[in-house]
Image (cartoon, rainbow, N blue to C red; front, side, top):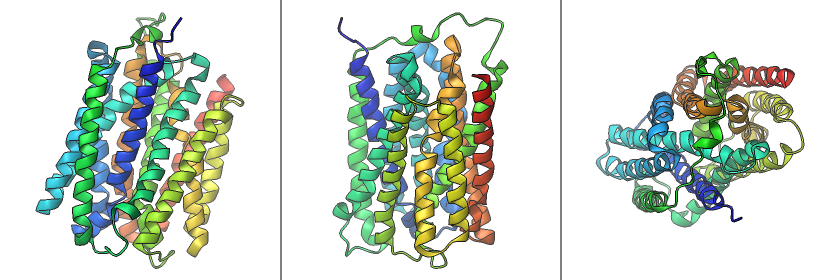
Length: 393
């Protein structure tokens, strides 16, 4: 019998890939936004706040899925993503940072709906035993796209163009192209054949229980909130860290190239996880990676020069698997509550709105390098959560 889930699974994989590409192109220019709008570190992170505060609505989107379905939610996600990308252009042309933040808000709404609908689709479109592997692969495709984005900037923006004003026409053209392609992807999801996956989650959950009564889910949400917030700070400040004269002092061109290396390491971690987690317990893998992340973070805070660069880049390998693995652990056996549970877990992206702003405030006070201490609490909590889940298995 022909597998009807295959085309939909591949479409979701493509969406994860292209949205990862788009988000990296939007995020890689944060240092340019900082210079163009004359921002401090905290103000620079308002872009992260605007993009991730919509995840407060994630639980509501989880409930909405019951009425419109997973595929239609994905269609709306791509339309919002496209609209937000288009809004960045008038924001840059007018020199209005508030309009840029509005664009990131709509991008965040789209990303919110994409993850709330897309992650359960990845878990359901295939054998249950490989759900964690598919989640890591889907998220790895986004990371692979994020390798491509910084690498292509050297072809899109000539090396001779070093000023922010000189880069603006290239940035605006890029955002217009990305928005147009996202609009086409929205049309593709609208016209694609629906694959009903809701039945995969409706197994006999007790009507007397709700998702709020599952400690595994609640602690998973806290873990995801913390690790995603720290990850957003690593992403948002990566080029600032490398270009800081007191740390490594790289040029903007060099930091863009290293951004490619960072995402290559990040993608390698997720691709490796899609293979490793078919052979060892995801909880064991998660504990090992949280320990590795803390070692690299300590070196990045204490070292200078290329040692610090190597450490902050290597963190990408270890943290790459944290969100998809924590998500798979927390949502396991939620049955017909899966849509709402997914919404709650994806609401953890609110950490990406709050923690980078907190780190920016710390960086403005005591320096960028020391501000990375916020990461230790997140990795410790995630590690202890994984240990607790392994004992229950």
